[in-house]
Length: 108
Image (cartoon, rainbow, N blue to C red; front, side):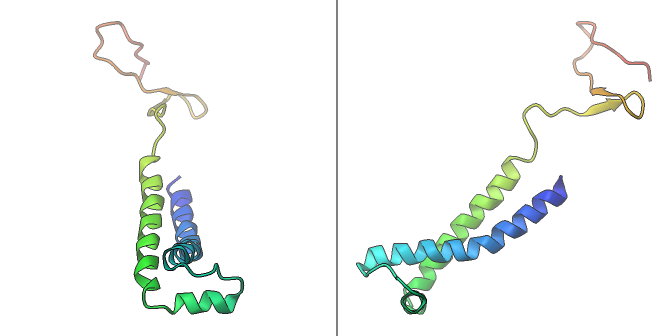
């Protein structure tokens, strides 16, 4: 499970760069009232603008925080419980409670 989250985090960070770049270009064109870039040369003119870099950095950090929050918040399901192994193939949820209502105790 942890390996899947690491892979998802790495892929999310790699995909975050072009997504943040595109979002920040659209925000930059909206705020400066320029035309939306139609080709790569127009896109490059916006990217080299000195006002673009702080905007890209803010969008990138915000998207990265969303990725990290998604990985941290969903670390376990609400319905997850630890398991007790009876045999190699049989596992039951771990017992809970203090014993006042005769909860089931498996033979150890």
